[in-house]
Image (cartoon, rainbow, N blue to C red):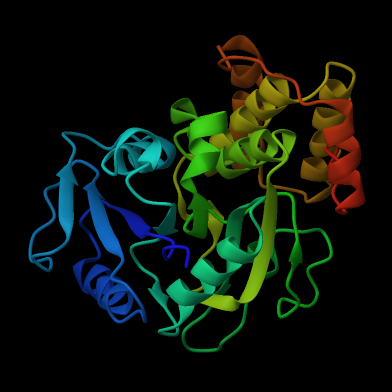
Length: 294
């Protein structure tokens, strides 16, 4: 009999939601099957009052979401290889059911090329899933599971072999699009990504623009994403489409100014190593419903 898939979990926190963090950790501890080992990364804080079996990695400052998660991955050995897969969970969410870990084990066992699972995020009061939390263009039915081309960073599970093969999240992104950067690299290495509506993280409905640097980071990181991952002919097409989409949404003057500043910064700053995806990956993304031009 093959051994059960070993699971770990990485949670990053700024220490400002202690009650929500404790509820999340309790929901992980209640999972069926073998225990899920948890690492909490404190972004400029030393988290306290946590269960004794939770490992804490305090950082002297907030290094951003992707770098914080990378540090959490490394706490499970190089590339997280002390376990077979890692859950990434927002500190103000909680797993809705006790069988989520077992469903993850079953999914990874059944499909050796499944590299990433994106959970459904639902509001704990209304049960509704925001459109932006369904990682595909056709998002009208959040209860439909499917193969997808990206995932939700704070409600996901990643097989650690993916990190060993394609590397971790891009530290410099700080916030925004870091999941898509990893997803594109994973897909280019022939891994698959599933959106699973039966794996649910309860999370309060919040606007993404609550982050102070949201508009700047979204624009800068989208340019970096294209420069790092797309074949040269697609870079201007992808960014041109997103420029038009941004203008069509009629952002406020301050939001548009921040977005334009980020767009310029994306071209003027170092985007990191460039590894353009193969054209067959472009076709694969297209067949999955999201060509890398939108």
